[in-house]
Structure formats: C-alpha cells, structure tokens
Image: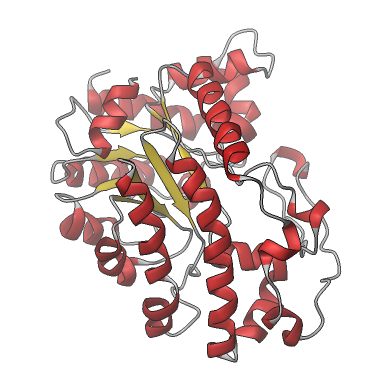
Length: 348
C-alpha cells in the first residue's frame, strides 16, 4: 500500500501495480473484518489494520462542509433501504416538504441553507483534510464535494419533485445553476487547501443512463462542472468525477470539461472505458460487480477479475475497486478469495 502509488496512478506516472481501494467494506462488512482481524473491536485502529491487510492505496473522501441542510432548511428524506448488516441503516421515507413545482423554481439553496464565510470554510476544510491524512498516512486522502448539482437537487427535493420540475426544462435550468453556484462556494474554499486530489461527486444519471435528454446535460449541467474544474485546475488539483449509474456517453464531454479521471460503477462497460480513456485518464473501478460476488460463483468472480487484470495492462493510471461497493451481504469467503487472488495477480 502506498499513498504515492495512488497519486502516481492519478497523475498517470509509472506504478509497480495498479492502485487499490474499496468502498464501504470497513464501514459495513463487520463480519469480514471480524474474520480477517484478530481481536477485532470495531475501532479506528481496526479500520487502519484492515486497510493495510487489503493493501488500500486510496481512500474515497468528500465533505459538504459544516452546514447541515436539514437543520437549516427544507430537505426531502426519501428513506434508506437495508445496506448495513441487520438493516441497521434502514430508514422510512418522510413527507416531502415541497408540494408544487413552483416552489422548486423559486428555490435558492444559498438563501435556504446559508453560505459559510469563505475564510472560515477554508480553515474547516484544511483542518478536516489534515486530520484525515494524519489518521491514514499510508493512503491518499482526497477533498471533494457530494451534493454538486443533481445530487443537491435530490437531497433537497427528492426524485418525484425533481422530475416534475424538470418537465419545464428552461425554468429547471435556472435551479440547476443556483445549485452549481452554491457548490462553487465550497469548491473555491477547497481549492485553497493542500489536498492534491478533488472528487466531484454528482449522481447525474440512473443505472440505465440519463434521465434527461442528453443535450440538456451538455447545455445545462456539464458546462457547470467545467466552471468548477477551472478553479481547481488553477490551484493545481487533479479532478476525479464520480457518479453512480451509467454515464459512458458523457465521458467525452466530461473530458472536454476538464475531468482528470473517472470513478464509476461496472454498469459502465469497463473495456470500453479502458479502450477510450485508459491512456489519458485515471480510472477508478473494474469489471468486478458486487452482484456477481453476492449471487454468482467464485469462478464468475474470478473471470471478472481476470478480465480486469488483462485490461489493466492498457491503463496508464488504474486504481482497482469493485465499483458498486462490497456490501455486508457479500459472503465472507468470496471476499477472502477475492483479496487472496488479487494478491496473487499482483505478487503481493
């Protein structure tokens, strides 16, 4: 494991092997950690020990700042399905505080939630980043922002009201710009911090692909990303774009907007992404699907790993990850076989 290895992969510099990270495992898969670690207590030391054991080089990290939207103004709690072991994270949906699209068109997140003072926000982010990196010196920690544009709208309005408001595209575009402007305040603050890598997260598509007309993305969403990334690039940051769902058709547009790499799920054709961007951009993902790990055989998981390993030879900067997380219902023996085989592939 190596912080420098991950950073070199992002910068497309030579590395002895691909980088490695996983999502959610150390937070949710308690059975795996208890099996892998002697005297497991569930504390931060155990998390670090697991990251060492599994050769993590990179830790996905974003921070939306000190403002709690739900305490400052209206948000929509759509609930949460079971993900953690025993369904401890299950949460029932609450009534949406918006009842008419007209409320959406009049909505301004800066007015609703408030805007922290810039220098205070810089100090908040720098302290947060330094504490993260100090706690995890062997991994590359990142800055980033989660509720960028569409994800911000989801948090505020929920999917039903968002889609109703999108039925009037021109008026909805004004709302999207307000969320982009709100995000820009946080991006400008993070640009002044010492982190070298920034993750721009925005779940702007579905698993099936775009839920708005592709031209609408190219006219009203992706240009907003470009404005944000100009700020980050001027500050010398590398920008990784991250979204759930299938967004391969927008990857060329995101490249033109300034993305230095992609964090993506296996619903995106890994081979296509490697063929088109493996030599020019850092890729964080793989052909390994957690659904195969959960419901398939070890032979099927191994085949996806072998496919990733072969395609990795065409990548200048790859950080290997099961792109749609390894949740708690993936069998422990499959997780152990997965990591043991990964170590074999990399001669660790």
